[in-house]
Length: 344
Image (cartoon, rainbow, N blue to C red):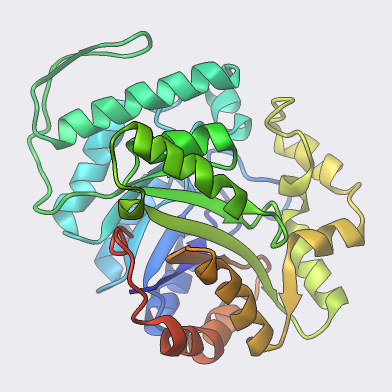
């Protein structure tokens, strides 16, 4: 079954407002929620940045069926991977079959600000591999003694095990990490979002499949998820104004140069032209065009679509998708078959 999800931006909305948005998303028929796990937001003015692990407990308690997970938690620097394993297991116990965990190599706006550290990618990748091994071992019920290069545990054990396995998604926007997702993940999550709807995330699929085969895994068993950047607006100018709230995340080289201060991000984002903004977000008020965009990702093999809309008119966007977009996608693709389809 096709999974149609809502991106919950903890950087943009206060926690209570964001929770009400998710409740409305469930009411409108969304299947899943992808919640960002950030310490700093992408800009300095008119923003929020709640602690997602507190918020997720409230989300589970206030909703009935919608699945939810982190997009994306970095379990390697400001967090200890054993603690993330425990946090995820707790949600798995409280809300069986509804929680999934997304992990990645991180962003400087979260890790540099809280630890003063931003290792080069090879180290961040190796840290993530160790973290996944620890998380998996603890979820498997082991009394885990782990001696890695970066992390150590001694007879660590989780005394609350979920009745159902927790799917683990690995985030990747480059071929090397996509290969890692194929080796270690139940699912892969990427963006057709901050990189723009024209960004060819499908080019990463061969690396994902190669990693799975190297690990002697069936590539078709790995769920494929994508965050899609969309704006519901009746005209281009209105849509650009909405999308400009996230312009700071579009500035090239944020990770490369280790930019972590939202004040700097906001300043750099102000340099971006309207043309650049428009090229990074899909802007339309036509439901048929939104359906057609989603179909491109479905036809490329993605079974989990998370729609990320900027701006403050979230209820309008959620209702537009719930009434005009999701039903058409389900009518055409509701019986879509894919191994790993239930992962989120």
